[in-house]
Every structure is written in C-alpha cells, then in structure tokens.
Image (cartoon, rainbow, N blue to C red; front, top):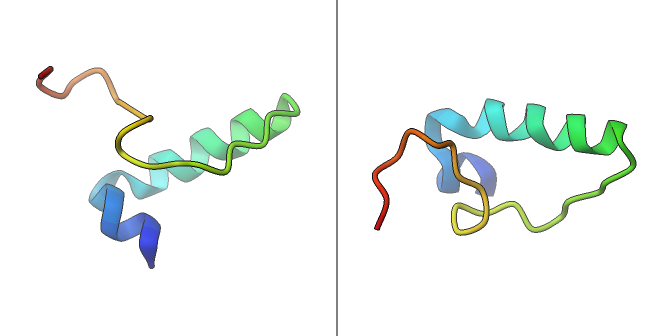
Amino acid sequence: MKGVEEFGRRWDQVKDLLRTLEGYGIYYHDAKPGNITFGDEDSL
C-alpha cells in the first residue's frame, strides 16, 4: 500500500486529515511526505 510505504506509522493520521478536508469540500489527491508535515519533525 503506497500510503503506508510513504508515511509509515503516520498513515492513519494522514487518512484522518484527508477525510477532514473532504468534509470541507476539499479533495486532496496528492498526499505525499513532501507536502504534508506534522510539525514535530526536524526541519531541513
């Protein structure tokens, strides 16, 4: 599964985020680590 491979243990959080966005009418189809951050990761 691509999402699990890209996000690992955070995949469930990403799915929750995508469902929340859909609730606001935002359909986000490009979920990848380069465009979703969690705020607790080291910055580059």
